[in-house]
Image (cartoon, rainbow, N blue to C red; front, side, top):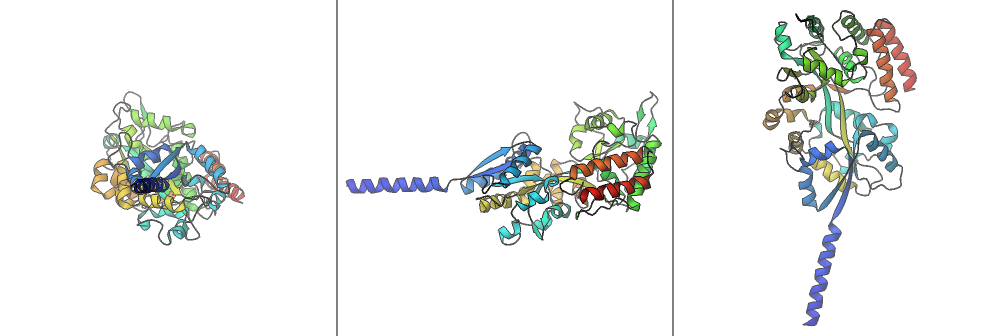
Length: 420
């Protein structure tokens, strides 16, 4: 009898020990927003706890290390330099996929033994391309912030326009037509954007078909399309259709102008729709709409984007488990659920899902924009300096300090030296 009790107790201990041994921890380095949309935290939680459900099924504890953008990538680079890292999965923004960082990331197709995730082709091609190296993907796009044409529907109607522009030529014509002075002396400008950052003016030139630096780091700045875009900016500025302080304008300035009705249109991400339609913060709430930014061809679109991808360090010891979570978060149904938690989904098809259409007022426009998008500037060791060069040259052309031809030629030579 005693022997049976001892055996039973020993078996219980073994069972408990086995259970404990199967419990695993996955360390995730990310921004807080990634945790929020994966778990459905806070007010935006219609999609439920996607990551938590996976963790429960797999007996895994998820340890989220959430930092701001720079600290995330500084920590990741330090971890990649070690023989072994405790970071199992990292969220990486596209501008940080430098050659040095890429060397430290695991090719995911090879790890998966085929397609890295389900319906990988359904992820926007413009997001997959920058994270595909040697025909294998090293990061699975998860969240994007993409530029749109934001417009005040009431001002457009006041000036006789029934819809946003459908081509870049129509945009130029409308910017001029939407510039006027009200009876009370208030000046309304046809267009505004962030003159101190490269993303929005590069979106403008992209609408003309111009490329600054291509994915392969070849510089394309001295092109007829770039000259045409810079000439259009100079003409708009000198005719008073752009705010006079646009070379120093920041995000607060843009929000203030759109919220007060002092600007008819702006270039900024789709998500700015929420702020500009908040009755507590905007006098134009209800009037602000968004559309894809128009391109040269009638009905064509162009958008600059910044996006985050899920990646696995080569020196991680939990690669298979990390890949399993990536595959779960990237399932088509789960990218829709994440969109219902406030994520910017990377699959154009998600924006046609009735649940997303009901939740995101501008779903159709954002989905359309994903069809033709590019990163602002490809990632390399001097991406930030390349952005500064563009700002200097586009401002010189816009302000009339240089001809558009000279600015494009100077941008070409300066950027080529930087890339070399």
